Length: 420
Image (cartoon, rainbow, N blue to C red):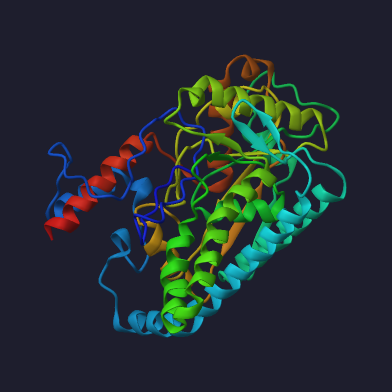
């Protein structure tokens, strides 16, 4: 996910940045105000409406409005206040407990074994036996438990039959489907929120593409503000204990990513250019296709998140391996707050998400997509056809904008907010 989360303490905590297969090397926060004179400025209702038409894929349509800062009705304010003092503390404590439990499980399962190292990549994805089984099964269970804690009590899952897919892909003349089912090398999903990762972990526990600086959770700042600092003030003598807890929480994502077998990306380094990253991803996808024990790759070819109603152009990195893939479509129906991470800051999104009594996810799994010879020879065609299929099956609108336009939209929204 191309994501930039605001922080509560800029000196001690930086945002989580889950990164997808994108050749962009721009690391500017999406929702950080830009004082550059070249930043677009908007003012007034007409300008905002024009922006929303142009950048429709990133427009929030829930009760909380643009950037989650809309004027709320009295009833909504009362619901938020009630949830903030009752529901949020419970969810924060339970969520931290789940993370700590899984951290301890990963620590125990990786004792006395060295991670696999390959060209700046380091992970435990290839450990076998009981260790791998415990890490995967516990990871899936606790990921689902974390979703449950966040209000996703029920997850609607549907599997589309092969006949539907064949009808929708009939335009691809000469497509040769394998008579024997083959294991897909990668799971391809639309990208709506960081919650997508939790769902896929609970479902299949695949490997992801992650930024090397992923060692800092978006929740760390919230945890520090809500739990660690208040407890330290109430019990000054135990301040060192609470700070130790925070340090453990900060270190957890690194171990989690290693156990997931994530492909690390460091955009500031020349070693993580497009060729290097796509090469590692392609090798992992091919290995997962050929080896049943290898973890599948989970890829978000859009390269950034949308509001869930649109499908952006696909990057080709996920399709260079020429192997079958499994398309999965995620949607987040909502009544008050949209879990989509589009034009709202990370901290505000987490807080409002914790305040929702019930959240929803709808999952549609399409049949394994077997590329034709023409698609194998042309990754762009392969990516386009998979995208077209997913848009048709998921009722999504295909949009031609991307991350660059998302940055422009966010900069314009910030300009509007600060002018107001």
